[in-house]
Length: 403
Image (cartoon, rainbow, N blue to C red; front, side, top):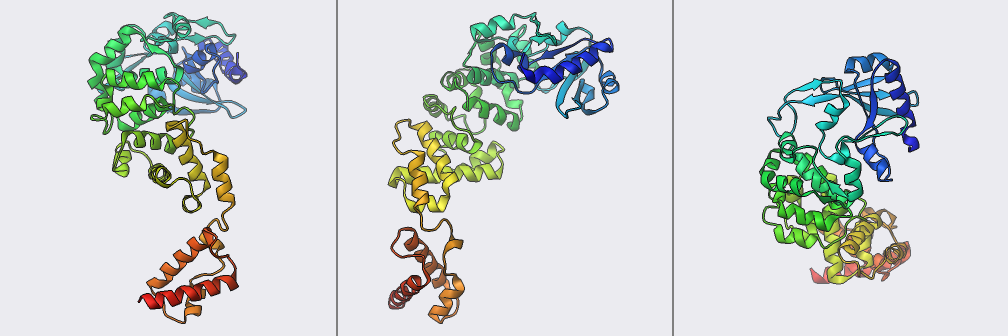
């Protein structure tokens, strides 16, 4: 077992000492069986939330009514500990109307979404797998626990999660699970945009993107995603790309926006409830990409956008066109060769210009300053007070003749 489980073992031991069952469950068990990096480690137990709070000195109530308590260890690590439970009908296609605590691990695993996530593990590493999830993992299949349609009627987001998992793990959908999504795709409409956005971001970054975007179209789930109902052909075009090496949200969404040929980027991304900071970064990425495709990389562009944003935009370009010849090193060298990295480094300011010109403030100052900035960037004048003074005087002479 991964050493990440060691602190969790102590929690299980304490629960067992008090007469309760406890197992590792969910994604951490699945990832252990797949030799993947372990994320959050969840524990399921027969103990009630009140039992858990009584047994452990440091806990956080994040949903006792649904059975979940966070337990903090002496090392300040946190583990989500949830009471075995069954669930009633889901009126909103997302959350159970009622949760009933039970004492059976089987009943708890039976309510879970997919067989690969319905596996438990003891503190010593013994696997408890009533729905043959390990077999499905080995076959690289995503299969609903029990009757697929019932699982999706309980929580419609599971349909999108199925395709997201397929993308992340490069698995395929079991036929009945696929058909159930096709038949019930309209239920996704009731799910909040924020939850859809979280799933789509993980889907786009997955190694199985091609198959999964095709699934998104075949199942018609895409029709219930913001502003995508008329983007079928563009989604299929995006399926030919590989975005798994893009490491930021703004890079992923820039690739998405570029291939989908979105014109009103702010409106589109706002409909996905993305933060303003991410939207702005996407807009910058698209501006850089558009400029590079027309004129290539140049000092002025990198100066205006900065090295970090330029590198990110370049990585999007590479993802969309692997034959791109320009390297990160080329962009870094262009940036290093800039005489100045920002306006603050210019040795003249607005007061200096007014003093030289002997005039009052006016729009000419902004024009002069911009021309001077570009002249320095392109190397047609040096960032030196004496040299710039001469340059400014010549500029003013031309300006006076023009007006």
